[in-house]
Image 1 (cartoon, rainbow, N blue to C red):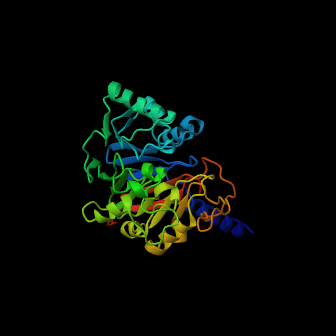
Image 2: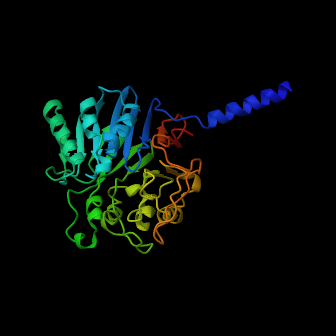
Image 3: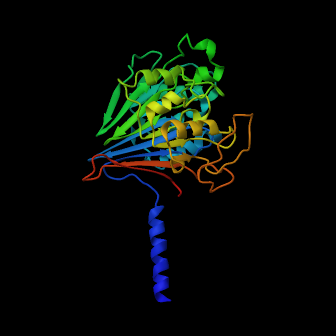
Amino acid sequence: MRYRQLFIALVVLLLARGVQALAPQPNSVFVRIADIGAGLCCVIQINDGDETHYLIYDAGPPDNGGAPSFKAIKDIIPVGSTVDLMVLSHSDADHIAAVNEICDAYKVRRVLRTGDQRTSKTWQTAMAAIAKEVETDGCVDLNLATTEFPFGATYQFGDAYATFVYGRSAPKSTWVPDLSSGEKNNCISIVMRLSYDGQSILFTGDTVGRHILSPEKFSAFSEADMVRNSEIIPIKSDVIIAPHHGADNCSSADFIRAVRPRYVVFSCGSHFHHPRNATVQRYRKFAGVRSSRFFRTDRGDDEGKDKPGEEDWTGGNGKYTNDVEGRDAVDILIEKKEGRKKGKLTVAYQNP
């Protein structure tokens, strides 16, 4: 009996170690894709040697005044710290809501944004906060509508590199007749590639590469531009934060082939039927992504069927049947390890 108890204790210990939550480590890049419902907020901590750098990519939706996103940011970045770079992929409210709180709580050194004009209260509040940060803390406002900032421009943080892959202040005039109003806002999204020790993560905002229900191999707009430029500005990445929360008007076949991700993360909520099943199947078909390497910030959610051909994907571990915000954040850790040719990459749920 005693040996049986010891065996059971050992099994429990090994299982516990197997599902241990990730956390920032020395000589590492740590990224959390926050579970904040239908929106996007990514928090990045870079520890390299004696240096620590913080980056933010998008600031989440306006639910509760952006409080869930700001809480996720504070969980990683201590209040009063310096944020080296805040990227706002585009001006939709579900990507910018916590900007005011971020600018109040931190010294933001640089903001990279599209500069497109909107009228929402969320947008107005965010822009006022950035203007104040420029005036009071000397923040550099990299507004693509007024600042020349070339594709491929790269910031170095220790041995980590953040590259501006794509982004516009307005859609190309040749695209406009073929884009819906929502696609016009999304197609200009700023895309950033973060690389460290031979591993890379692609942050894509709501970039656009197809239309909903387009033929499988249709590819155009921003994604097609990135594919054409990929020999000069690489987009191949080990992890992709999937465009537009997994909607069907992005993640085109050519784009997926060029990125060739091993892991796909969908930042999504329970009421927009994301990610689409068709999108997931393209990642399976054109990049060979395994079932165990899809992650979603509302795992197990099952919303049923939409219009024919637009069904949402109901995979993602299936642990839960109803989405509750704050439970399903996804963490990415890249660690330098002696004896390895490149960093050790781990992707896992914050709450395994």
